[in-house]
Amino acid sequence: MTTVRRVQWPDANDIPHGIVVLGVVLFFSHFWEWVVEPTSFSPVLSPGLLANLVSTFPLTVGIVLGGYWLRKSDLSTQRYTRIAKWCLGCLFLFLAINVVIIVVLFIEFLPADQQTSLLVGWLRFAIATGAASGLFIGIIEARAIDRELTAQRATIRAAELEQQSDQLEFFNSILRHDVLNGMTVIRGRAELLTETEEDELQLSHAETILRWSDDIVQVIQRVRRILETLTEGAEYERHTVNLSSMLETELERVSATYPTVTFDAKVPPDVTVEADDLLNEVFGNILTNAVEHNDPTDLTVTTTVTVGPKSATVRITDTGRGIPDGEKETVFRRGESSHANKSENGFGLFFVDSMVTAYGGTVHVVDSQPHGAEFVIDLPRAS
Image 1 (cartoon, helix red, strand yellow):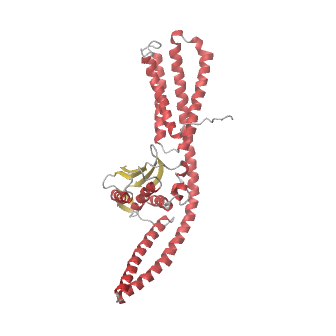
Image 2 (cartoon, rainbow, N blue to C red):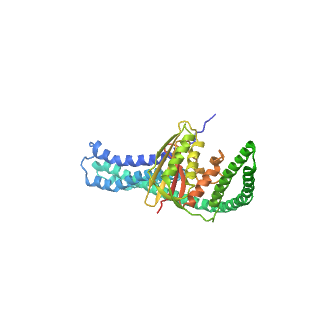
Image 3 (cartoon, rainbow, N blue to C red):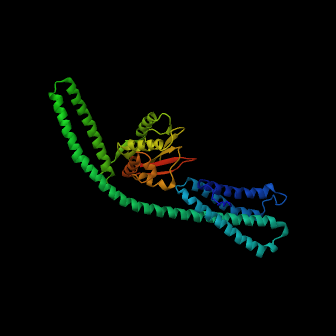
């Protein structure tokens, strides 16, 4: 039986490193030609070698910086393979064209004592030019594809949000009229019992009903606030809140709930943003999500806050298994991704996205290195 082996591309996450390595090799080849091989090449920086260095050096630096930028960018890793194909395709195409030119037109006119040096320099220039051109084309195309997909998702999401808004308004009306009115009746009867009942056991029961009625009313009012916030077009007011204290409070709460998980934090004091008192719930949902969707054994959750001129950025990074590229957008939509469906926290990230949007900020998720997920929350600073 014949086994057919398929040629596979390297792991997508390794492609930016490979591009950087290509640029570094081309860069150091200049020093190999100039210093390491003095028997074949002149150790003196000749005009030809200097011209080749000047023409090729910017290209090699561009390749290195392009690979580094690609690794740090928010481009989907699904685009890396296509970028690599553009880079290698242009490299080999440009190299083949120049080899034909050298062999057909120029090889016999080159001085014998300079043939090797000139050929190496020419071929290096062809490789650098082809790779840099392909990398540039691939990145431009990848960004165009991502922008188009983002626009399509935004259109679909707008329609979904309109439908969800109608549903949330319906639930809000039920809470506002039916449930809250019912709790008002129950609380009134409990108050009456506490004023008239003389039996200690019955009085204790009445006080318990009264206490639970107050708690349930508070929960209903809180849920109503959330529903009103999530309902498109609802009036919403922001005010200045202390991001640092809210985040530290949630970190303490979650770390006490999950003692086997390591929580690291770097939070500067007194960072204020435009939000409301539910901001701590935003952080709590993301921190809890990081634990619930990963094995808590040897799990580390790192939280950092950086402050810019107009916004504060919170990064919550875990060392778990990460989120597939196909779910990085849908993870914030209620019940649409397997990530959300694997736990009861599916509403949590939908709530996070909706609240951050109401604050005038943004939230997205990217891969962390070497593995895991990183939630990035940008919030407007308090003026």
